[in-house]
Amino acid sequence: MKIVIMGGTGLIGRKLGSILKAKGHGVQAASPSTGVDSVKGTGLSEALAGADVLIDVTNSPSFAADDVMAFFRNSTTHLLAAAKNAGVSHYITLSVVGVDRIPDSGYLRAKRAQEQLIEAAGVPYTILRATQFFEFLGAIADGSTEGEAVYLPTAPFQPLAADDVVAALADITTQPPKNGVIEIAGPEAMSMAKFIQNFLSAKGDPRKVIPDTKAKYFGALLDKEGLAPTGACISGATRFADWLAAP
Image 1 (cartoon, rainbow, N blue to C red):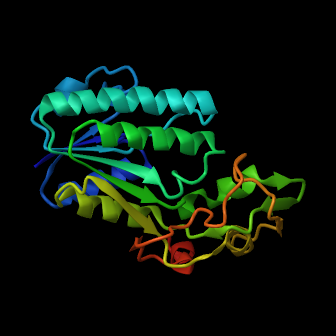
Image 2: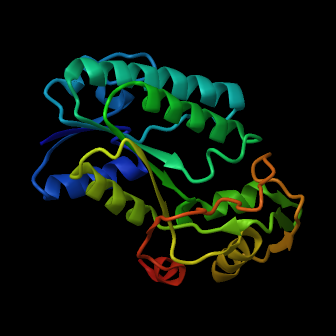
């Protein structure tokens, strides 16, 4: 099976490509650095010639609301057109848990717009929505720091290891298209404030987290479900303590 990973040179794409190659699939990592630019639409027909599956794990270089919306609209429109022309039988994309519940977030609005383009395109698809990665907990703390304090919501939070997202994507690649959404979250749930405090304490970071029901997550107010799944989901295998202890 020929699999094209758009965004294949990034964190998720590199790991996913290695797993799929080990399973015997033909994998092409596509990105602007390899001459394939989904935002401009260049190099796509050549990359997707003969492809069975297209996996989109691209991300916007700017998280400004207008920039990220333009990125996902342009990139996804070009990818869907190229996938349809190439006869791709399964279009897979990575999205975010809560994308349909938190309109205050420009990033999540853009990801939901991306999902809607995929849902309406007529190409068989599966959308995997993931919670936040353990690898991004430091960035969340930094983005909410004022002085020596970190102000974070008390909303539910259930992050997971990037490797567990990669494993789920690899499994989805060999399954029939769902033509719907699958969600994945970590095995442990607590408030965002508590989870980030545990992370900082484990890293020896002296900052203290102040739980605040009115605190925003990168400018967005979270609802009572926060950034955790509300229904059935895949549970990542990696516990937070084990991820911290890994080399």
